[in-house]
Length: 303
Image (cartoon, rainbow, N blue to C red; front, side, top):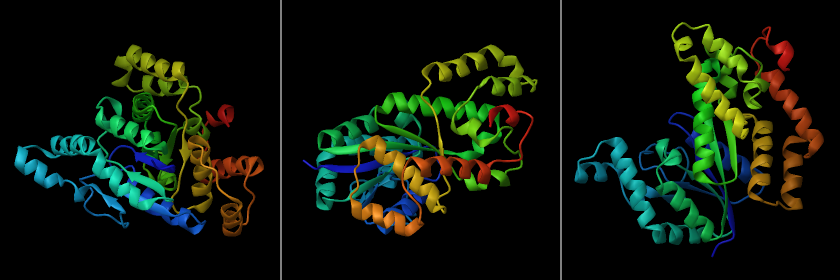
């Protein structure tokens, strides 16, 4: 049995999972944690970090595709099912890194976290083995630029939370790039991170003659998200150490990780700022002021 902590980094393709693992591992190491990255994605053949454990040591996606005449998606699902049946191999590999904090870089196929059971079963086995995990679900901030895409991201986040049954943190990744998109966000950043009154999104969809045809469906979907009242996001720029610190604090709180005084001193030395409630309040304002697009008429009521 291992008494270890870690993060299950999940999210759609292109949401920045591998980049996140690389940046967070460097950040955590800088404050004194021993970090081990586990690559669970058999399609990830261009790692920018050194993996402590790599699924390709057990099975390769190309081999699965060739031997079973499968496409990329079917081959990946087979690899994850194969990993589930060979949990002893994974547990043996992880046991070589006792005392480490684990980052599990997971595949981007969303069905693995919405209705397919293998990732859920793998996670359940890790919990039985003594792991304290938090799922970190990355969503590209680009989805904020389109009401329909953002509603889709909300539904995906909600489905993942219900399926995985883990302490869960939703993250708007690449928030630093949000102002570079051709279509700026219609509302202030707080609207998207706190998931405020989604009726404003319905109004935006009604302005489009195509989406207006599905008004009842859109209303039902928005109502579903609001009824559960579970989805919120933390904005992230992986090059901003204050963003990384704020996210670290949220994840540590979610999975119960307690750091010692040495790590806290390292954090204070690194950022020369206090860690606590006062810092969180200041940080929230910093993210809003730094990454919000030009305010609109809606922002007056929302911010």
